[in-house]
Amino acid sequence: MPLTAPQAQSPANLVIRGGRIYTVSDRMPTAEAVAVAGDTIAFVGSNADVAKFVGPRTRVVDLQGGVVVPGFTDSHNHLLGVGERELTLNLEGTRSLNELLARLKTRIAAAKPGAWVTGRGWIETHWTPRQFPTRADLDRVSPGNPVFLGRADGHAAVTNSAALRLAGVTRETKPPFGGDILRDASGEPTGMLIDNAQSLVEQRIPAPSSAELDSAVVLGVERSLRLGWTQLQDAGQTWTYVERLRRLFRAGRIKLRIYQAIGGPGPDADRLIAQGASVGEFKGRLTIRTIKAYIDGALGSRGALLLAPYSDAPATRGLLITRLDALRPMLKAALRRGIQVETHAIGDSANRLLLNLYAEAFVAVPESARAVTPPRWRDEHTQVVSLSDIPRFAQLGVIPSMQPSHAISDLFFAPSRLGPERVRGAYAWRSLLRTGVRIPAGSDAPVERGEPMIEFYAAVARKDTSGFQGPDWHPEEAVSRPEALQMLTLWPAYAAFEERRRGSIEVGKWADLTVLSADIMRVPEREILKTRCVMTVVAGEVVYEEKRKK
Image (cartoon, rainbow, N blue to C red; front, side, top):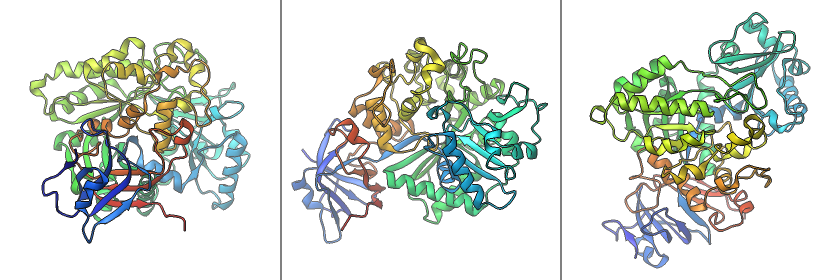
């Protein structure tokens, strides 16, 4: 039976038909056609029944056997970083130290003498040998220009000697709280800075111009729309950045939905708590209601906070990078004001600490004193969890916001970092789902590539993009394709309090749609990675369309 909005005979502005539509709705799981009136879905049903919505001005799209899914949402993305990756030295995919140095040498040749060269994207665990680069390596190709190259995870960077000199970092320099300066056997800095120690050099890098920042945001938005994302949930920024977004929205330069978190604890988070959430600006395209906090660093750079020492580095358990005496009052104040909190937690100790902190706040601020119930607070990453802590997410109502691609990037080093016992609780999607939680999926771009097909594939295959999985990588933790689709559509909508407006293809919901070149619910696993976005629709507007070959 077709699902139709009131005034069903009114012509639609857009009709898509002639393929398979996965609605992510139990009322009608699949359909043949969808009609859009304004920014809203007006009809979901058969090719025959949709004909009544076609008028003289209706655009009719014939899928020719293609597939439509609810508009994909990236539940954890760093939009500015994605754009900046395109503007600076993009080191994504470097297969060796020599390749990194070759790319850097090309960039240095085009730079002015003494100018800073910055970039991001290298992952040493993809190299042979699997070891961090050093300032001596960078000095070979850049003795004069200061260089700062971030690891893909954003939690470590390598700098050259020129950069360390400008920052005044020497063998006597003490690392700041929540950071580390790696040193060689003689005590000299190697050039590797972990977590908060990166700021020692970053503060010396000239800030980009306002026009450059605008370009980075717009580049990130355009790339996202080409890939089929209809919303990004941006994990932590400043009010200055929010004003930039508002200006770009007003100018019509952003068509993407953005669910923006503000970094905290600190003055920016205090401001959000004081003034309250701003929901649905620009006709539902911009919402600011969330604070992003951090517990620890990243597993790859050994900054993730573990309950026991690293298996491959017994002298460390990782880093706590935010002071708890700043987190605790912020959590209680946010709960009273109805502000959502999402907190970065990678290691098993960090995840336990996060759950404990949230539980403390929930006890201190009873439901009667909260502005929003349930608060839908989030654990961003949830990468390594003690098996005894897995049930606590459902018990507390905490949302594990996870990135499937991390599991297929980290499989090359996580076993050695964690050992066989801790790996059992790593990237444990199936174990968490069994407890009844929803898992919104994201990419953490630019840490990862930021492509929805990689995230979908990683969730269902639990293998890297070449098909490699490795021993004891717990294939039983993979999810089904219907679950993976919910992870990229309906569950992110829930995590943003938007499940009544988006996340499934149902009459009355916003018309956010992603059109794909192949049926990802049926094709062989490896074919998922070859699937392209051919059209992206946000609020009923076609904001991206693949050019058809003549």
